[in-house]
Image 1 (cartoon, one colour):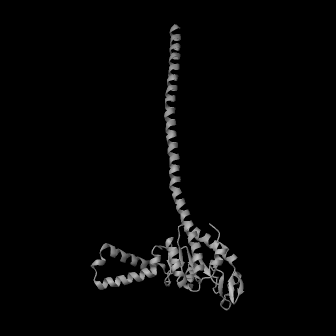
Image 2 (image 1 turned 45 degrees about the horizontal axis):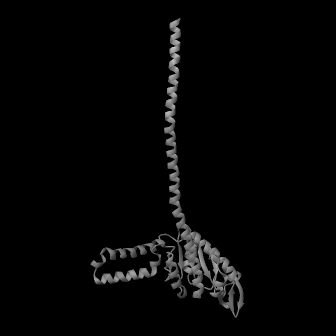
Length: 289
């Protein structure tokens, strides 16, 4: 996995924090300086934190688990939807449905309802309904798709959350904390980094900054998925090779047994041939006496 480029972060404006009067004192370790009333984030620390987070998401993806991306703010929603959909990970870019993690079974029921409507449309049941019923179902389906369509493949709780703005998505962060789900987040100078497991000190308002960091995470996940696929491909080949070795060993043993049998018969014949003359000689000696 390649190391994050300092210059790219600088060009994307990742270092711009919030106004000094809006800062959170707990972000002090990540602040480099203040300029014109605005805090400047220490990008050297950001580089280290991004690499740590990327290594974590790569490992999660490699293990076959899911990372849920949460970004409902206007600057981030389209970026996250586009990048994360491409790697087949779940994401929330509309309103965060309260209890999505802490009341996960109910959310799954809503997703199943959406799937059952899809089934109705394909098996012909939908065509038998009245015009009014069709309209109601279509509206219900559109609402479910808007809120839950991006998490339709999330069959169990995610292994981690990636959050773009921890102040805006505080409910998602609280739910993850309650369930001990690790949270990876872009944290600006006005936010509290305490509830975040992997803090990425960065500008969470600029679309360029968001796009760059989400891209880095997406690439790390893609690498993890590719490594997982490569390992799976190796497993059948290794099993086949082992089976081949065992088969050859069995054939070799069988061949050895076949070769040994005639030798035993020959040895037995030789013993008989030696014993017969001896018996005759003894009989002759008795007759002479």
